[in-house]
Amino acid sequence: MEMDMFEEGKNLLKQGNIDEAIAALRAALELDDENAEIHTYLGVAYSKKNDRLHAVYHFEQAVNLDESARAYFNLGAMYEQSKRIDEAVRQYKMALEADRGYTKASDALNRLREQYAIEHHVEEGVASN
Image (cartoon, rainbow, N blue to C red):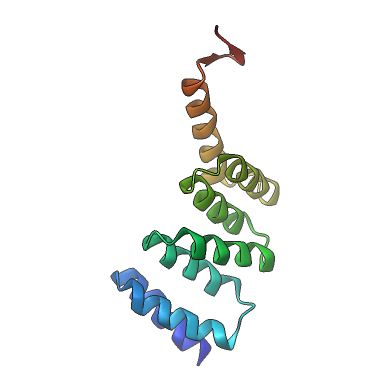
C-alpha cells in the first residue's frame, strides 16, 4: 500500500498535480515515516508550492534518515532559496563529504563563491577597497 501511494505521489508530482501529490505522499509517509525517499519527494512538492518551511522540514528528515550527498544537496538548495547562505554552504560541503564526486554540490559551492566575490568586490581572495 505504502509503495502504491508513494508511486502515485511521484507520478502526480511529475504531472504537476502538487496538492494531490502531497496528499498521496503524506498517506505513504503515514505508513512508513522513516522513508527518506518519501520525505525527499515531499520536500520537492512543498518547494514547488514555495512552502519553504515544510520543504526544509522534509529535506531535514531525509538527511536524518539518509546521509547521502543528494539529501544534503536538496537541503542546501532549499536553504539557498531561503537566503540562508551559510547553512546552504554547510549542506553543500556535507554533500561533498558524503560523495567527493557529487558535481551538483561542487557547482553550487563554486557559484556561491563567485556570487560572493562579485557582491563583495573580492579578487583572488583579497578585498579591494
